[in-house]
Image (cartoon, rainbow, N blue to C red):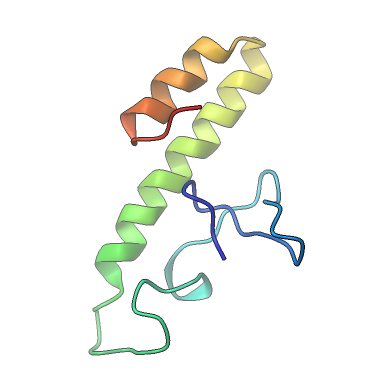
Length: 81
């Protein structure tokens, strides 16, 4: 199971800070099917972008000590909180 920011969850459904999963190593948007070669490239690119933005926001928050920068990045990928 993945969070909206592509962070995998542990067995207790809690996300693992600083860990992101994309592509075929993550929970596929196509469940257990693989319709054709290249079919997972689009979702991998989208979730890669989302994971990258989340990682940048996390790093910004860690280094600046301010939530302002991370909220701007998170809002750019549709995540607020």
